[in-house]
Image 1 (cartoon, rainbow, N blue to C red):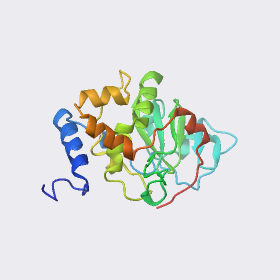
Image 2 (cartoon, rainbow, N blue to C red):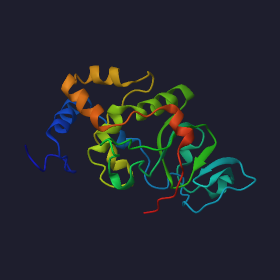
Image 3 (tube, rainbow, N blue to C red):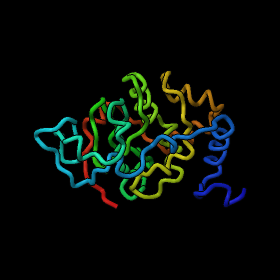
Image 4 (cartoon, one colour):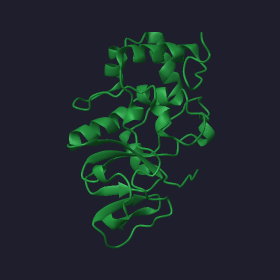
Length: 215
C-alpha cells in the first residue's frame, strides 16, 4: 500500500479497503457540508440571554440571542440543520474498556431560527425537518462514525474528519444495513466495523454531558 495515498494516514488495511469501496461509489463527501469552527461566529463563552430574535444553544444551556450578534452563517438561520458536538465522546480519541468508540456525543436537529456557539458544528442545511432528521440518523450509524474514526486521533472533531464520509441524499432514510449493502461490504468488513464502533441510540442524546473543549 502507498502510505501517502490519503492526506491523513489510515492505519488498518481493512479500513483502507472500506474507504476504497466508498470512494469508488461516491463523488462528494460530508466535509463539503460540515461547518467550520464557529458556524455562527459565536465563541463558546457567549451566554444565552433572556431576549432575542433567535434561540441559542450553548454548552451551558439554552436561551435567546439578538440576530445582530450573528457574524457568520446567516444563510443557515432559517433552515433546519443538525447540531454536532465538536468534542468527541472518546477521551483523547481512545476506545472504551471493550475496545470500542462512540465518536460523537451530542447530535440534535436544530429548527429554523436556532443557532449555536463554537462548542458545536453544524451539518447541512435543509428546507424540511424530515431531511435534517435523516442526517441525524445517518450520523448515528456505525458506518458513518467508523469512517470518521479512521482519522480521528484526538478529541476535537473538525470538518476535515469527514473526508471519507459519503454525502448521501437526505431525501431518503439511511441505516447501517442499507449502507453496507450500497457499498458492498463483506461480512468480514461489517464485523470489523462493529467490533470497533459502539452502537449509538437516540435515547443517549438527551443523556449526553455537554462540556466546552476549546482549542
